[in-house]
Length: 542
Image 1 (cartoon, rainbow, N blue to C red):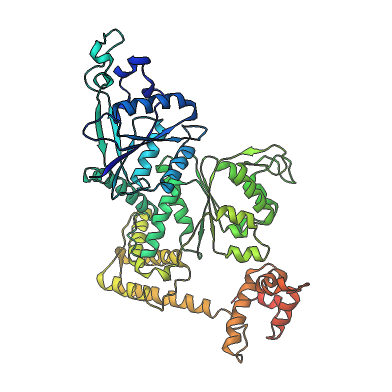
Image 2: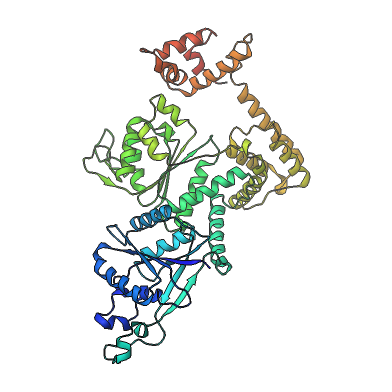
């Protein structure tokens, strides 16, 4: 037969009822716990505050009288605030990690009658998560009213504490029993509903994506920390950010509004003004004060898409706003308070941007606590079909007419959309555009095979022109090795604002090993080998 081991807090109110011999006639839960004939307690791990040491000595002595076989092991609780969840949970969690549990020979219980409500909640969480392999134990006073102060104590009872001590009711709660499956099922259903909200009801089939969304649901529901969404343009970062906001709003985690900005659209002084606001007269043309997006997001959620495009000055101000929940509008010496939650999006490699001196390492560390890489559509081909249905329904909601494929046209489009020839360079945004085109041109909202064939031709031409967009710039008689390298160089040059910026990105590693680096000159000479120049590349329209 297993030994019964109970963990519990000393109750500085309930366990301290009555003085002298009269304490025996009052119901005291810790005493009652060790007074149960149906479940003898072999060992009591009794947690107590140093301020209650005198009470501890009394309770230990009384347990020895009532239950001589019970070993009492006092555990001093060193926490400042018994109502502070973090302190209490951490203390109990540490006990669970260091305790030598022996479930083969001992049965464990957590006594939840005594202690603060926070302590009781922590007991429940630690039992539910199995950090304590234990059942919950609740003591209740006896139904028969105990003796009052005016009741007489006869001579027999006066010398017999066992006869005096009220015997209450013990209830054991085993969280592993099937009777609690309904509660667990409700939690699971809620989690499933939250996950479906993040996916906007799309029945996604890609297991990696579903696992990613399930984790994001947990993080969004339990944390206020920044979330970083990485992935190619059109992968759904903005859409997912809005769904995370709706989930937090549903969970009453957030009261303010959803504020979104693409950082690639912010340039110069307008970037600081747009994000942080400005006071009247801060610069030429500032005839009125401006609040700024960070203040607009107070109590809500701020989504900074393409955060890698922010300037270094704006990055420093953003970091301060995240950490201190306050910032200075442009031209002001008075701080503004704003408590917002942050989601950042990027299609850039921010670690590479740090190496190139274009992104602050401290800001990256702050927003990279929860980082997720959203796959492109080409990596989620099993999700194309449910997303087609989602786009059709979205079109119907916006335009009031439900477009439909027939069986042949649907199969033809799906076959192409999931084939290696379908590059989906614009990802879900491009799929959305494709469905809109077919739905708009569909006679009586019926998408025909002929329309599908036209759309396939259009998509193929778009992808071909994109792939070959630099053909007129690249000499015909060069090796494939040089061609692929040159195409990438031209692409980076077209995206960069200067020769130096492009050079810093292209020579990011080698430049760190040189005492002096002239990236612009190196790039200029490389382009000249192929008869190209910076001006020629930037004047080319493809």
